Image (cartoon, rainbow, N blue to C red; front, side, top):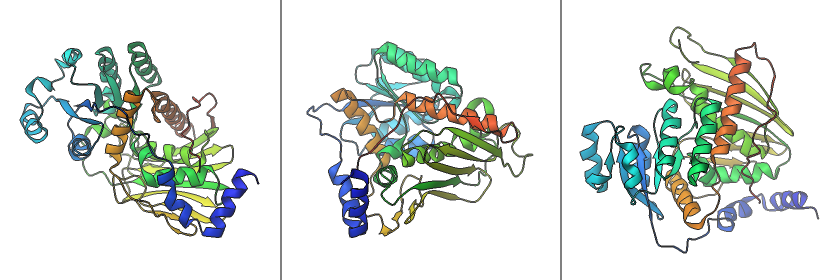
Length: 375
């Protein structure tokens, strides 16, 4: 029998429950044969570092929090005490480049406002460090290219902070969607929350590069691509900002439609609307869905035959451990800089369409970077 129809038949006979429950057991990361734990330095100690990355580094097996870079003196003592960080491993933005002399730091994780990603990725690479950069990768095509080139020239690995590629619920969406287990698909995906503080960096064009599309919208783009297992071929978009008086520099809300070789994805994100967060593949058998889909924990998954039976994990710990293993085992990251470049190119075309009366814009020429999962 051909592979895809055979897979469909197994799921129809078993209601999918057994095979879905076994997938994480069949496909897991290779164990490292090395004992070394790599040192990570967090650059920027805002909410994501404080609430997610720092605590996750207490759970990681192949890396640990070795250093910090901060412009706030008060944070130095707090982080040093909590994570037992040596005084000589604490840096600020003025002396950051001297990290080149610190052999205890192997990986630099850039957790700064979007507009600062390029500068510190390039400086970290020149200092001889492997780099993880938070999404979105940068705020211009040129900066994305410079970041990739800097890491390649330095001979260092470069990864984007796409944590959901290491989450078991999203792993299921990839496998079940890409293999069309429940038939052909179209996708709807939305992510929004009502932003109360309109004085923060996320609403400043220079620092953020854009509004919710440069933040929440990245999840919509990613989710659609890895559920289809294909690159989009065109996009059309509309700026749907509700209160333009509040959003002078960036959009407050935006919607777009991406066309794929085998279907369409309807996406929206907003900083103005009440919370919603889902990734849904509408299949011939019913909904394959994550809701909530993109948050740090509490994800729930559903197939046409019932709930996904997978065990939640710490997404950030899994992401950072996977990158450490890439370095230790000299293997490729699932989420390279080229994937971040691909997504920025799509974002740029979405803005182009929204600024030109929802013109249909071709996405020809995207980097052919896909995370494809066998069933």
